[in-house]
Image (cartoon, rainbow, N blue to C red; front, side, top):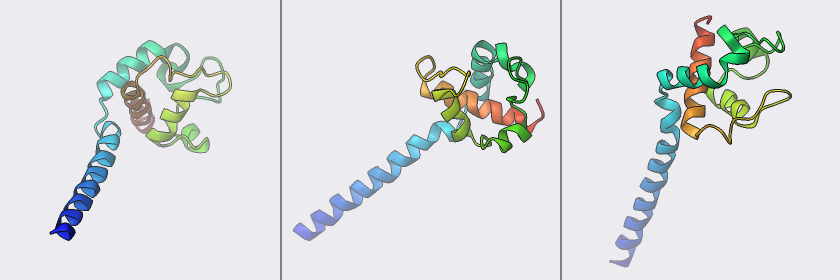
Length: 115
């Protein structure tokens, strides 16, 4: 009986871990591109209008540039948005995690479509 109870608890913990990992990935999977577009319009378009960069031409959001700089995934873009780099400000204290995921997915999708 104790062995069955121990196995049941272990199984429940395993299911909890797997479900928890799935839920953590859910925002990236189900990105709201419409909200991402809104966040981009408010916080990013001032410097990155149409995927360009009015401050540093070579730091644009075109797919080739993203790929060259290792920013060709939602996770990599989200890291940059969260922490900033160089003269780009960090937005981790201004945007929620969901907003960052959504705007990152929007940027990557727009880059793939050529802005």
